[in-house]
Length: 211
Image (tube, rainbow, N blue to C red; front, side, top):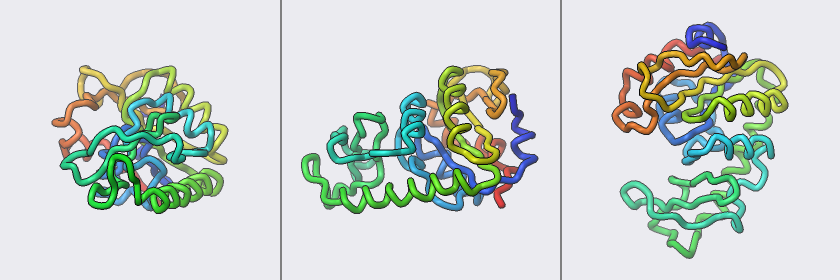
């Protein structure tokens, strides 16, 4: 088990969001903790088990055209929400509705190239970084344990995970999951009031150090 204070006592070459939505990436940027875009920073990835599958496959074939299906418009309707049916990960911001339609994704080639660049940078950093922090919202004990196992095989040097598990227990109180690389905190991650609370993110992210 790792505590939040222990995470804040370390220095990281990279800090990456592993979902489940855009809020970790938004607030990482606000606190200057985001050197570059991760693979799924701006995606919707509800299922940690599917994120684990993506990592296990080294992000291979994410958003392959044949795997994509239209779900809906997103937010204010300015973008389309397309889902990778294999990984159950949604693109929410990549396909502007001004030039893409439900059946015609004119932005596809540009989007796919962008994710290929992000994947290449991400995998390179797994090899070259001395210490990496991963931030994830949502997941069970079994999924978190599997995530540790997968990252041990991907990351050459040190890594840690900050995981928020959906819970009505005291906000940001620690969950003792007895995982050696993971700090698990309780939070109502499906509550927009919590997700948009600057004080919550300040408590989480203030004090983290990126080189």
